[in-house]
Image 1 (cartoon, each protein chain N blue to C red):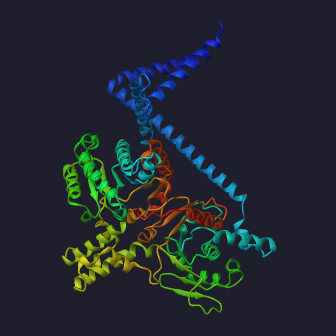
Image 2: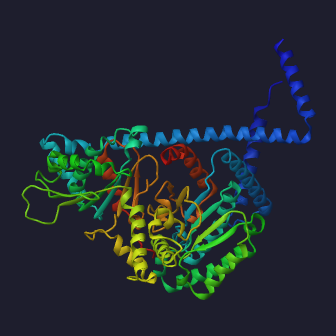
Image 3: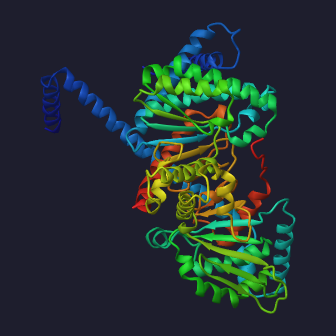
Length: 298
Length: 310
């Protein structure tokens, strides 16, 4: 009545071979010459989505941040490592952004801010700046009209920044995206483009002076709250700030908002490689610190 | 007997579930699933906390194998200590880049009282003394030390007295007494022996929350008053105008390196305008000494590349 050990080994070997074949042929890398490539890829996607849903459900048992902010750094270095043009890195970055927004929406995060273009990025080569502006124009319209996030999940798009520095086409695309989604009640997406924190603070100070001049405000009423209400970003202070690519600085991004009690995470991975696993670790780390942050806020 | 009891309980449970209808069964399943996920979440959080502690322990073990930083400045001037101090000074001088302005964020008093800060930090006055000594050793010309609640400014006289007579500070300055300029919000004191030079060897600023958000609000109020009186037009309030008004009276640059000495990676309301292009290094309280923390931060800063948006 004993079990034949050799037959067990044979079954394990067959199973291991099958799983290896499914994983190899289902990978994103182009190995489509292998038979059954498409079904394997579909199976892997299904497993990946199911695992992600389970992990999202696990995370939702704890506290979820109301506002998370990303500095999407590393697109050009990602492209350079793969011997491609910088623009392709930005396109990969945008594709990953849509995935990240999907995860944030599934997690129930109500505000997401992304640092798309800094004012001092205009110092880059004219060809790269022009390519980025074209990309922004196309992708803003695409996000506002065709994306699943806007259509199914009711995401509201806000383009935040000093728009006077943008060309007419990009300004029109930004206004179009905001107009198309202004009545949406879902997650608020702040696309900071072109943005710098010092420009935002100066803008708020200027608005305070204008409101005082227009008698909408008295001088003795001016305090921190009055300045904060006039900042460009109309979301609560971020709970988490994430910067990818391993750089450990703010680069003049959301300084007023992030210098308070924001949990700052610097991740040593390029933005197009930022995965759900990284997101999971960041949120676990924040949930562990949540009690301490609340205590210090009190 | 026990088996019979379990059987009866199971049957009762099944009957209850069936009796409450399909919708309740789905709800119960969802609740059971949520409960299981909550248990998994707690286990994952525990694993993370253990992993973090393990990493800190490994880091500490590695630094113990190296130079004993605290001993170099606090110990007696034996030949071995003098040689090691010279070795460290040469190492710091050889770093490809060092910050001209270093800012250090210390935990505020209530955090020191309520949370286990570890052995790295002593009292505020001791910490300022150690930081000043390290600033002189690394030839940093400007150092800002920040505590949110303003406790450093309240201890201004004690800090000045300590720095005036500090052997540690003298050891860090090759046995000589340095010319130190100590500044708080409304106090400035030059701590020097007989020095003809008007330029201090190190300028130490004691910052608090008042140097940040309230300063910007006060500036907004002043500019609004000027606009109201007609002395200024709102369109003249540009980024350059605000930057000029917020600039340090001595024209000092913003800190290039900010060292956060806290387990929590939060900026504790550090002056936001000054953070524009600062590198941030966070070192937890598990570090063996403040000297180790400063040394590690300087080594990390030496390797960074600033691209200024390009």
